[in-house]
Image 1 (cartoon, rainbow, N blue to C red):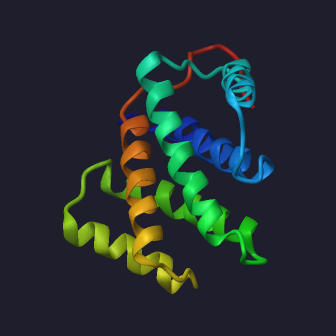
Image 2 (tube, helix red, strand yellow; image 1 turned 90 degrees about the vertical axis):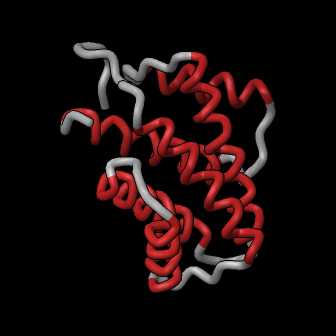
Amino acid sequence: MAKHMYGSFEDLIELASKFVEQQGGKWDHTAWLEFLSNIQKKGFYLSNDMQSYLGSMLESMKKLYTSVSSTTEIQNIMLGISENTINFIKKTQGTWDHTGWELFIKDLQKGGLSLTEETTTYLGGMLEAARELYTFPIKVPGKGGK
C-alpha cells in the first residue's frame, strides 16, 4: 500500500473509535448515516463494500466497548486498541498468520488490557474488518481533509 494512504487509514480507524465512544456503544440508523456523511465531508470516499467493512468494524468495536465499558478507563482502552490495530496492520501490511495474531493479542495485554474469550473474538472481528478497509483507497485525492 502506498505511504500516502496510511494517514487516511489511521484517520478512519480513529474516527470510528471516537464515534463508538461518543455514542456510548449505542446508535441507530440515523446516527450511522450521519457518521457516514461526516466521514465523506472529510474527503473520504466510501464505496458500498467499504461501508460494509466499516459497519462490521463498528459493530465489533461496539461489542468491545460494551464488554469493557464498566472500566473507568474506557476511552484510553478504546484509543489503545485503535492505535494497536493501526500499528499492527501497517507493520504486517494487512497480512498475518496465527502467530502474528497471538503477538497482537499479547501486545494488547502488555498494555494492560484484560481479555476474555469473548473480547478476543470481538477483537478478531474488528481486526479483520480493519484489514479490509486497509486495502481500499479511502481518500479522494484533492478533496476534503482534516
